[in-house]
Image (cartoon, rainbow, N blue to C red; front, side, top):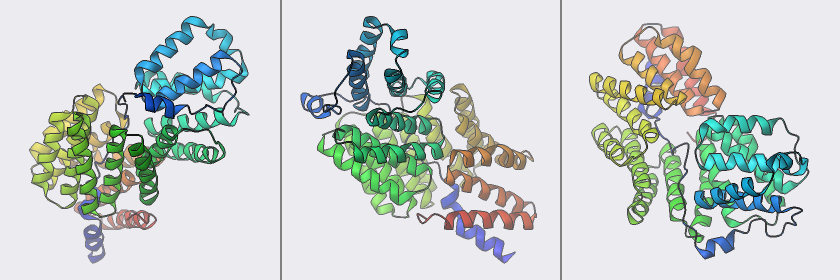
Length: 406
């Protein structure tokens, strides 16, 4: 019995409150200056064999810069001026066309269009052109991240990093986007120190390019990692930097992210009332419903910790309705599990074992796998199933020990 209590105290609330997120889809726009256009030229040393090939590289460059308007104009021109069926019949262009098209859809957050293009890409052989393969693996890394497959995202990005070292003509913007995406994926797989390493590299590049929005997002990534590393002082500085940038450029999205993550710090410090304040302030600034689920989950957990179960349940039910409406599987799982927990429903055990834990393990999301193992361990403990409770608490601790970030 003492061992169970000891396990519970060690894990406690810092592993329960893991509602961090930098948003799966950071799809903001970035105004181009002439300097950034000149700096881009990521494929400037390439020799193009056809006008279509050159145009596809230009579209890719605009997706790197998150310039939706320019990318769209080039895509429309491509479709108007060239026979796409003929383009797709050329094996040397087919893969590049589909990969660039997928990256364009990712830029525009067209989730319903991801899978058909991905399936077409998957059926094609790899390219002998290292530049195409670099774009291929980097884009797949982003695609897998957006579709919550973090293990595959890691593999694809590792390949992109290896190729990037061999290609002398990658722009600073392109490198920054690669490092930025690697740091995002590393958060999900619990590789905190690697995430910090790549986030700092991306931040340095984005600052040199005067890309304020992405610089702020890098501050958020660093803040999340330092919070997980129990360096709340560093985390707060990064979040405040992001908040200040958001305020200076009038970006409510950046402000809302910074406020949400300041709430996460307060949650970790067990200052629930302050955490709730930040989550509510974050919700006020969110213009897109999809991003609201992060702070709603935070509110569910804080009210649960305060034993204000009615408030917690109200927010969980609101969050579940929203997650279902916009078809966010991860958050449907989160909110459903919390509703079962709040209702002391016997469905909690099979739901976590059969759906929740397998989902996050398959995705490579270590933090949420641990969180729900702990939730189940506490459930067993409260129901006097001490042997099962001990096994799950021990599994949590073993998983935590396997990650040096803890």
